[in-house]
Amino acid sequence: MEFRRQLVECMASLVSQGLMTGTGGNASVRLKGGNEVLITPSGVYKASLKPEDIVKIDLEGNIVEGAHRPSIEWHFHAAIYRKRADAMAVLHAHSPYTTGLALAGRRVEPVTIEAVMLLGDVPIIEFMYPGTDELGDAVGNAMMGHKAAILLNHGVVTAGRDLAEAITIAEVLEATSKITFVASHFGGARLIPPDRIELIKKLNKV
Image (cartoon, rainbow, N blue to C red):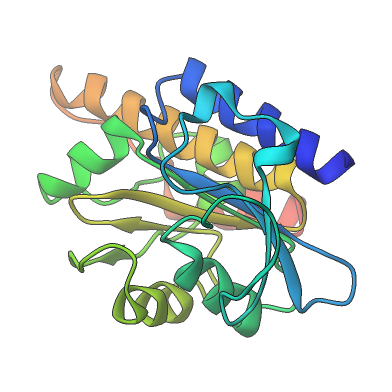
């Protein structure tokens, strides 16, 4: 029940921050044993989820427990879990600033220490139709060695050792995009110099 409550609170928090809208966005946590996942349902307003709305599935998308259909994006959740033994939580948000900057051809840049430490390089995945094996495979491959990826015309995906880390990465990614957006209107962002980036990574064992 604890993981179910965490997923409900996660959705409410991200809706309040403007990172999810209506029934959009989803999140999951991997259960002990590694082959089953708790995931948010499809078509249910995310700000009013209840613990009993959460669905349990296996990594093939089969419903193990729950009255709702799992998120249609279960494909890329499962793909990440299959490829990343360290990933215990996956989050998909419709982050407006990050998505907008990617549509304008802007990549995530080292504008803050948090961006360096938590984000690193963030790959951008070309648009693919939601809820498909094609998108699932693309996201699973892109997330190898990365904490986040941007889905063009769609949103962002993050993965963490727990749900709190996945949420934090999504929040830092959007904050970084907001800073970049503001700086772009006043001549552009002054990035952290490469030698300082290496020092930050060395001191923090990134």
